[in-house]
Structure formats: structure tokens, C-alpha cells
Length: 170
Image (cartoon, rainbow, N blue to C red):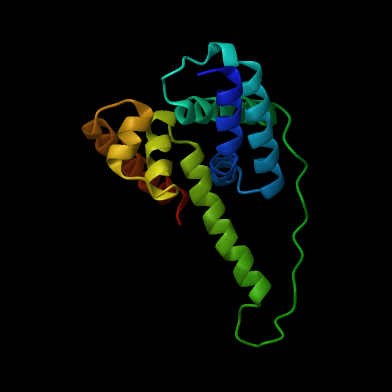
């Protein structure tokens, strides 16, 4: 498989890269940047790709590494805090639709943060089955591990996720 063919396949996988990046960042622009950075790095490292191996897994690994590196940098240089604004409740039902939306997003952010704390070996199979809606067999093939390993890692990922969310008091 030539570099041009692999480059074409990388371009074809952009929607999947973007979805995976979006699941990690929960931000459209950040996900687009992450997917683009992954593509740039993959195209720059085409010579290190072994033809006949799983291109998608290779790209997802690059994306994960880029994402984790960005998180490490962000931890060292945190973003400034924003001020919350209280809106009146025009409906009189106790929760303004914007307030309800903010509460739901806060809960989702807590779950996402718990997911982000999972070790990659557990988070990736969970993501591929839950978000990408792949079968255990497809995930096993993509990650090049036995199906039992995939099942075990997904089980452990769910247990760790539940424990972390419970610790946060959701």
C-alpha cells in the first residue's frame, strides 16, 4: 500500500476521527483542531505506519496521544474561570430552561471528566462500543486483542466510571 493510498484512507477516516475527538473534548472547535492535528501528524509519520496493520487504530492512538499531551499542557496552564449569570424564571416552574440546560451539562461534564480519567486501555474499548456502536468482535479486531479482553476492559471501564461518578456525588 503506497503513501498516497494511505493518505487517501486517512482523509476518508476524518469523520470518525472528528467524532472520537468530539467525544473526548465535547467542544466542536477543539475537536476539529484535534482531528486536524492528528491528520497532520499521521501524514507526517506515514513512513512509520506498517502496511497491512490497522490504520484506524493507528490514527486513534495518535489522536489519543495528542489529546493527552494537550491535557497535560492545560493542567500546567489552566484557563481563567468564567462568571456564572443568574437568569430569572419566566415560566414560574422553578427551573428556567437555560438553568435546566446548565444543570444537565454540569452532570454530563462530570461524567465526561470521569471518563477522561479512565486509563486509555479501558476508555478506548468503551468509547468504540458505546459511541461508535461497534461490536465486541469489531473492537477486538481493531485493537488487536482477544474478544474476552475487550469484554473485560469494557466491564472494568464501566465499573471505574460508576465509582468515579459516585465519588463526585452525582
